[in-house]
Amino acid sequence: MTCGLPPRLFLLLISLLQDSEETCPSMCLCISDTISCSSSGLSRIPTSIPTFFTTLDLSHNHFSWLGPGNFNRMPQLENVLMSHNQISSLGHGVFRNASSIRHIDLSSNKLRVVEQHYFEGLWRLEELLLYNNRITQVEASTMSGLSSLKKAYFSLNQITHFPFFSIQDHSHPFLSMLDLSSNRMSRLPWEDVKALPGLLQRGLYLHNNSLICDCTMYSVFWHWDLRGYNSIKDFTEEHTCTISGDPKASIQFLKQNRFFFNCSLEKVVSQTVTVLLSSVLVSEGEGIRLDCQTSLNSTNLSFTWLSPSRGSITKSSVNDTQITLFPNGTLEIQAVKSNDSGLYMCTAVDFKQALNATREVNVTVQLPQTESFNTGYTTLLGCVVTLVLILMYLYLTPCQCNCCKPPRPAGIPIVAYDPSSLSSVFLSTSRKPSKPFINKHVAFMEPTDEEGADGTLES
Ligand SMILES: *[C@@H]1O[C@H](CO)[C@@H](O)[C@H](O)[C@H]1NC(C)=O
Ligand SMILES: *[C@@H]1O[C@H](CO)[C@@H](O)[C@H](O)[C@H]1NC(C)=O
Ligand SMILES: *[C@@H]1O[C@H](CO)[C@@H](O)[C@H](O)[C@H]1NC(C)=O
Ligand SMILES: *[C@@H]1O[C@H](CO)[C@@H](O)[C@H](O)[C@H]1NC(C)=O
Ligand SMILES: *[C@@H]1O[C@H](CO)[C@@H](O)[C@H](O)[C@H]1NC(C)=O
Ligand SMILES: *[C@@H]1O[C@H](CO)[C@@H](O)[C@H](O)[C@H]1NC(C)=O
Ligand SMILES: *[C@@H]1O[C@H](CO)[C@@H](O)[C@H](O)[C@H]1NC(C)=O
Ligand SMILES: *[C@@H]1O[C@H](CO)[C@@H](O)[C@H](O)[C@H]1NC(C)=O
Ligand SMILES: *[C@@H]1O[C@H](CO)[C@@H](O)[C@H](O)[C@H]1NC(C)=O
Ligand SMILES: *[C@@H]1O[C@H](CO)[C@@H](O)[C@H](O)[C@H]1NC(C)=O
Image (cartoon, rainbow, N blue to C red; front, top):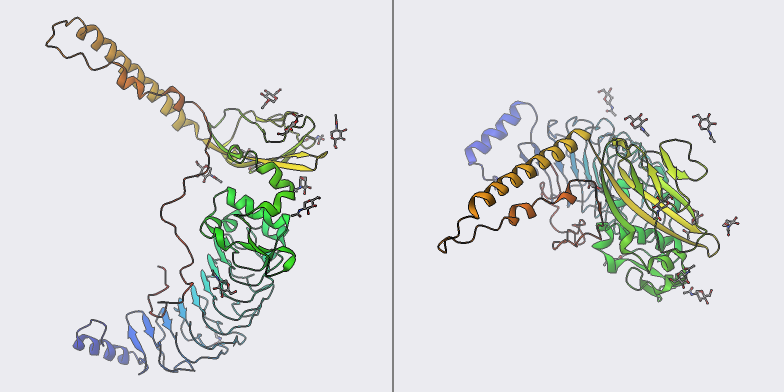
């Protein structure tokens, strides 16, 4: 098997490699930038591995341990594929001098504890695959230095606690996927979870754990569900929790939410889910008023707005002539700037009945030039069309002979001119229609074809 290359070319390639004093180990295949030693019965890294490769595939072998400096003669190494081995731990400094690594696949091994030194120094690491191991614990600072991390997969392990607090906006600006589904977490530190960066909350997978039902848990998932996150939409039925920890009393809490009827959130929500989200388009410099009408109808409510650019806004905190918070909860901003764009969230609290309700408004501030151009342009267009129509009307209607078909109805082009689309409008977006194609994101529930060098690699 010579990978589609003519045998002579293949031999030439091999001899070129030999010329550079770096031979391909006999049990491996060396192809352009990839060394594949998959399924070769290896338990140690071959000594004579050439140094200039970017992908090293050691999957389906018998490795049980990785020691210091294993990869330090490969300065260009980017992808390390070691799934389907027997690795139970990594020594100190395994990836020392291998800081160009972007992708590590250690899935389907026997790792137990992810120690803080495992991935030290891998500041370029983008993808970490650790699913289907025997991990019970992820040490607190494991994730700390991984500042380029985009996706991390910890599914199908036995994790009971995860250091959510170590993931923050500034430490992990690109992390958009953290898969902790099918583990053994029963209680999560919900305050830490709610403080996770917004980008990550969209891509946090927590289904099929052994969660214990309670209101705090439910309200977090409820909010994610309301925002239409795929992590919830694609796995609605796998979101289960157990009532007082009894594994037999497990419910699909996003479907049968009766149990949460006592949660104050639920009482409010059951009435007016659809009006909770809306969006506003406004041009820079204009004023906006965002109302906080919720299902709470008490006359004594207290309102808090959370805004993207100014943080939390309450009646007592307003100290800005540009902003007004009216007693009825309406927030007025007199001249919006482009950095006022984003999701505004209002919480109305009825202290007497201990009820909270939230209302979200997605504000998009347009730059003034484009808006004024559009408006001017469209208005001009409207005038021209009207003028043409008037002229057509004047010149065509006197034709009264029967052979003339009635002139094209003058109304048609005008109908297309919809003045309401020009000014700022409140678009009441209900939830987005669910996509016909469900992208499940988690492509590995059955570890299938990641053995090939090209199986799980991006880029
Ligand atoms: C890492 O590289 C530096 C210089 O490139 C070298 O001095 C050091 O010995 C290397 N470390 C290991 C563990 O090989
Ligand atoms: C749920 O997790 C268990 C292990 O914790 C696993 O065996 C099972 O396949 C998972 N189920 C689903 C639907 O992912
Ligand atoms: C809801 O609250 C009522 C009264 O406070 C209580 O009797 C009932 O058991 C609660 N229901 C649940 C599911 O917790
Ligand atoms: C508020 O609404 C509830 C039910 O929607 C109703 O029973 C109650 O009378 C209302 N209260 C006021 C002050 O309108
Ligand atoms: C409104 O609620 C606040 C907070 O509970 C309370 O201090 C205040 O007296 C209430 N006002 C009225 C008019 O009920
Ligand atoms: C938003 O931008 C304006 C200038 O356009 C600036 O004066 C203001 O400080 C910015 N606000 C924030 C919260 O960054
Ligand atoms: C409002 O801000 C000004 C300066 O920005 C400060 O002097 C004043 O004390 C503030 N007032 C309140 C009520 O915080
Ligand atoms: C809230 O009060 C402001 C100022 O009195 C008013 O302009 C606005 O229409 C009110 N909003 C609602 C929803 O009643
Ligand atoms: C309601 O809001 C108050 C103040 O924002 C908060 O302390 C409380 O935890 C909230 N309750 C619920 C059930 O969300
Ligand atoms: C808000 O609206 C903008 C533009 O329409 C969109 O790109 C963004 O995803 C929306 N944000 C949310 C949280 O819906």
